[in-house]
Length: 229
Ligand SMILES: [Zn+2]
Image (cartoon, rainbow, N blue to C red; front, side):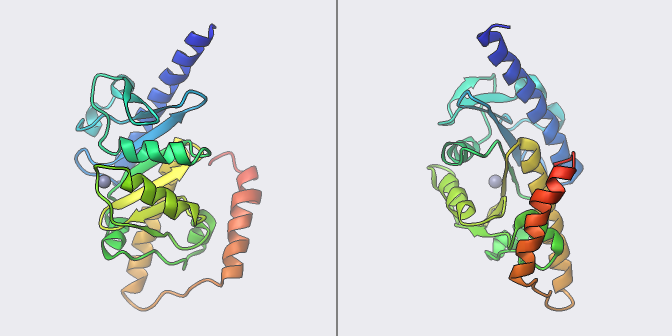
């Protein structure tokens, strides 16, 4: 294959992957109507692939995904890209190891975001997946790069792959789009469990040294054995 055909094949593959991953958002009930989105970086091309704006989940196809540059400008696609594209492009520009970004307003996690309250590390699963509490990012609105900046500044100071943007919802990152979707799914799951736990008392914090051990083991030993991300 020529380099040009190779690049086109890569983008076609990512269009299929990003389209298919949106089915996980509905499967795990993380989104309603047209809210939420998944994007993926196109390796080596300074491009990203993201959901089109305002298209229902049932109507998403690989072909109507939108290819943008890392400033959020459309490079290829018939639809306007998701209104979160600028924020996600900012993340890709400033976090070179990020291969995928997911955004949802999933119910329980967003209830924590509405209070501006981090989800405390009170479950081994939170230590495993997030390495500590799931942090809260600043209040920010669409229109400039303040959402992107808030995501990056919060996540760079944390081991968590997910941030609760205050009064808004979840942004999750990962080395791949699939890993970012997993982080968004897990974030909602622990948000719900810790919420339920708190109804009958105060959940018990895990000792920070144990959090470190759990995180290390899960991210390294377990990660190498598992074929699944
Ligand atoms: Zn949103």
